[in-house]
Length: 233
Picture 1 (tube, rainbow, N blue to C red):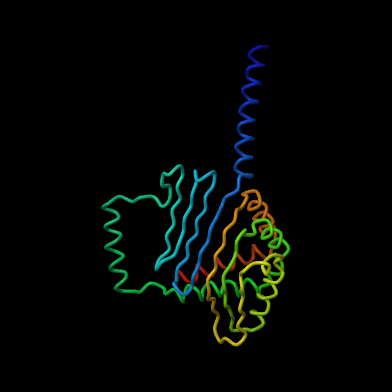
Picture 2: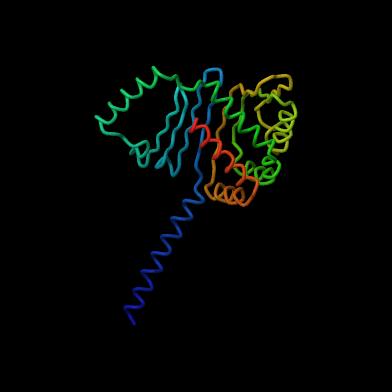
């Protein structure tokens, strides 16, 4: 009987520890900061969690880079062996001579194309209530900047303006939007600064609600198919 009682206490303690760990993961906020400037073709994102025990940084300056650290120890990206790295660098130099990397402008056009499809396929209107709730929960404590944008189809530009106006807090910040209804090609231009915090529980609830929408699942499928086609080319 005493042994069963001890086993019960041990199981209870283990379950309590697991519950505390889960509560910490879900309820301790991740603090973030974002700075993006299209004119300088750069962006920086920093995220800290558990008083900096876990940190993630990502950015773009001529090329994308990222780093994940846990207790100050680099986890991602993993370091490659010196010989393997030298081989890769040599291959990269040869590849650069044969084919130039995609320009920043091409990347912007690709993103604009995804946003355009997101709007025109009806995904934005389908997820707007979910998106509104999520954005209110993770709204930045500081948000400022100026963003100019436009699409070939003025109606798409108007729909994006409508979507932005549906976000409760967006026009109560120092972030200003300049829609362009006369442009002949899609573009995004400007700078944005943001700082705030996110709870993991809110992110999980948001993702769960998104994947329950058939419009989102169909949109993801279309994007994946387009990627496969572009790789074949």
